[in-house]
Length: 187
Image (cartoon, rainbow, N blue to C red):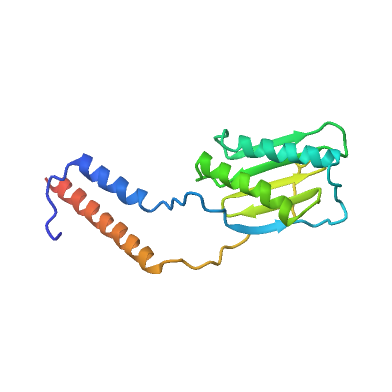
């Protein structure tokens, strides 16, 4: 690789660059989202099984799950029911780089997980690396919530050798592109 061809076809360079960049995107099909935190602060504000609120909550979670693949923004909110205090308000927010399918997977998983981790609660927020899901029996739309904060991901790289190999390839690609551009400019 010491000698770089002076006229590397642009199309070939572009294809090689795209292949290298796409190899950096982790695609894990069928994996569960990475749980981070759940906020289930009020164990006294609960609902009874088979109550109107329980029915509305099930409707809400079903609608959120089914609409998570239909939104280009990765955000959606919905209200189920019409008579307080049995109204269920909910929303989800997916990470901006997720595909709609990955967003749907996370929201569907969160919809099941949230009621298992915090059963019968009328107010819960759950966070994953990929998405956040929240519901309440009081309106949460356009209302600032200052509780909580951010969570720093302290997990180490699972495969440091692979990371170093990929970084080495990216740096080599960068060097090749710079050499190509210098050779092109000198012609």
